[in-house]
Length: 179
Image (cartoon, rainbow, N blue to C red; front, side):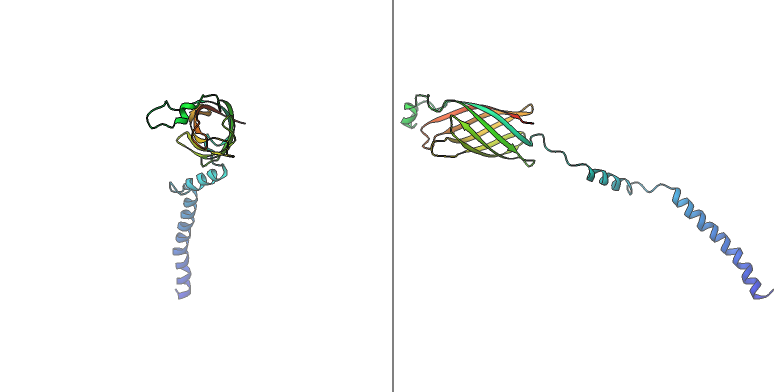
């Protein structure tokens, strides 16, 4: 036997089994599922990226009303004499509030009524609105607003005083979500 026939005899003897082994491994690899954790996160992240994030329940516009009443503390030692002179008839009655709450809980709004015209700024944290009423002019009251979640809105109170702090008022309030 010459060297050429030896080489040609070796070729089918070794190459064919290797070729068959390669083909069967390749075929087997295609039919096996991918290891756990390799494909699922990609599919989940793709699905998550298609869906917009949910907005917090409080994000949106709210309107409401308040009813202010005399809240001057009883005359005590050290209390201003002007509180004793307050007949409780000034700045008593209704008012309205309008506010917008951003997704991050930041609040911007306004109030109009017997307490004057105010700008409202604040924040929602743990389903509680805390805000500051800033007077739009010298005759408007200044104060704070605190309201807790009540259904799809908020209920709470305002505590405010005139610029000279001689007239003190408190008001109950209710805010309802607007469509």
